[in-house]
Amino acid sequence: MALDPYPDPFQEVVARRRCGERVVMATVVAVAGSAPRSVGARLLLLADGTIRGTVGGGEREAEIVEIARELQRRGGARLVTLDFAEGLAGGDGPLCGGRMEVFVEAIDPVRRVIVAGAGHVAYFLHRFLRLLDFRTVVIDPRAELATPERFPEAQLLLRPFEEPLGDLAITPADGIVIVTPEHRHDEAVLRQALATEAGYVGMIGSRRKVPVLLERLRRDGVSEEQLARVHAPIGLDIGAETPAEIALAIAAEIVGVFKGGVGQGRGGGARGAGTPAER
Figure 1 (cartoon, rainbow, N blue to C red):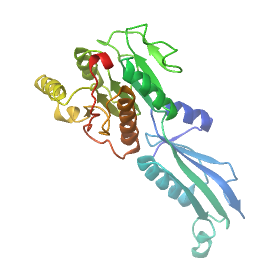
Figure 2 (figure 1 turned 60 degrees about the horizontal axis):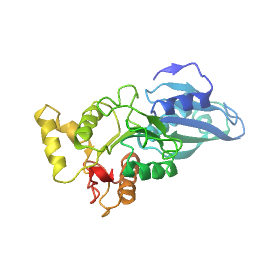
Figure 3 (figure 1 turned 135 degrees about the vertical axis):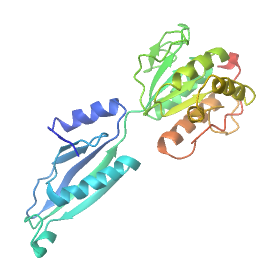
Figure 4 (figure 1 turned 90 degrees about the vertical axis):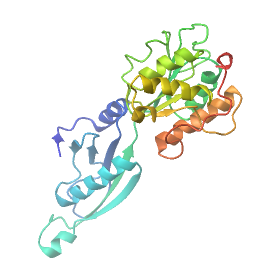
């Protein structure tokens, strides 16, 4: 268990979230009687196990750290009451005699979705993702499509699909959506996506063409473990046919994957996989 000097906790949380890490913050929210820390004292548990700050030390803090580790794995929050009078009766433990309430909260990383393709599906997907508080990066060499007017607040990268991801520092908190105008571009982006640590990789395509592409990757040495990461055909199967419906199915699948619910494994696929003209 590594201990580090304690910088500003909020700056630390912001920096770690941007790096794709889940951070757990424990904050003293109430004190009664004599307690080792006052209201507002904080402890951070970082993704690598480093602990910064303290809520009192000793056995009681160890309890908080164990709870923080649990929340780091599964998310959520807990309000914990620590009774420092318990140690007095047995003659060991902290000699404070008071009580302290500590709010322990897992703070999820900032989610980012990288969308390869700026066509009709991407247009609607960006709008759904904004409502869901995802940051969006849109990649497309077509300057007439990848515009701030069509994708407000998105990061726009006018670059070819052959090498779109190299400098994006993709983490498990990121998703990659592949909706390019041509199947050959889909394949090029997918090969690069599987070389990243992205927490979600989805590719548009028909139920006929997707297996052909995956088999080609398999013959080229891509492992079954890597292929199992691909959600293709992309999106939950909600009977989607229009670009807006397909985008909704994709957004729902992304949320499901990052929330640990539906959408695990290969995608069921939106029925209207989208022809190149529709993308």
